Image (cartoon, rainbow, N blue to C red; front, side):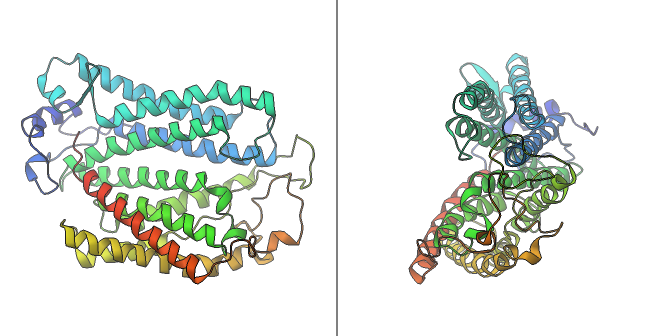
Length: 411
C-alpha cells in the first residue's frame, strides 16, 4: 500500500521542523512540502476506517436478518480488525516519533505525557482503546439482556464513541498530509484520501441516527430538525478543510456510493433468522435504507463557497453561515421530501433502491410499511421548518469554525 516517491514521512517532518514552531496559516506556502508523497500510515488509517464502516453496516444487517448468535460474528471481527489496525499504526507512529533522535521529528509532533506523535495518532489510540473496551461489555450485555432494542445501547454507545474518535484521528492524520502538500506528486492522493475518510465519517454519522431517519419518518418534523442540526456541521467543516474543487459534493457522493454499495451487495448473500419470534422470514441479508440525498444540498454548499470565496473574515464567515444553513434546509427538504414518497412505495422494492428491505425479521409486513409515521405526533409545520432552519444555520456556523481550524492542521 506504500507508493514510493522522493521523500519519506521522516524526511517531510525534517523539512517542516523550522516552520512548525510558527503560528500556521492556511495561506503560508512555507508549510508546504513540494513533491511530498503520501505516507503509508495515512493510507492504512483510511483502510482501517473502511473496515470499521463495513463491519458496522454488516453487523446491523446481521442483527436485522439473523439475530444475535455469537460474539465472534464476521461483522464483529471486521470492526475490531479496523480498530486494532488503526490503533497499532497510531501506537507505532507515537513510539517511532518518541524514540527518534531527530529533534525535527519531535518538533513536527504533539507532546503528551512525555510521548510525541501526530495529533491524529493520539486521537485514534483513544478511539481504538474505547472500541476494544466495548467488546467484552457488549458480549456481557447480550448474554444478560438478549437482542438490543435500540442501536445505541450502553455498550454500543461506547463502541460508537470509539469509532467516532478512531475515524476522526484518521481524518486528522490524512488532513495533515493534505495540508502539508502543494500541487505536486503527493497532493492529489492526500486530497482524495481525506475526501474518502470524510465520506466514511458522514456514513457513520448517518448510521448513528438510523432509527430517526428511516424513509417512513422523512415527512416528520423531527427528521428534518435532526438532519439540519447534524449534517451541515459535517459538510461545511469537512468541505471547508478539503482542497478538492467540489469538496462537499465529492464527500457527499462518496457517502452515497458507500451506502449504495451496501444496499446492492448485502442482499446477494442468503441468510435466515435464527431468533424467535420471526414475523418477517427473510431469505437474504437485510440492506440498510437507501442513503439520504445529501449530495443535493452539498452541491449548493459548494456553489456558495465558490461564490463567496474561501478566504476568512467575520463578515465573510457570517455570510457563508447564513447562506449555507438556508441552502441546506431548502435543498434537503425539497429533495428528501419528494424522494421519500417513492422510497416507501411498492415500486421502490427493487434491487437498486431496496425499498422496505431494511425491515428486520421482527417487523411483520403490513400497510404501515408503505405509510409515513408520526404524522400526528410530529408533522412538518412552518414552525418545524423554522426550527430546522435555525439548527442548520447554527450547525453551519459551528462547522465553519471547525473547518477553518482544520484547514490549518499540519501536525
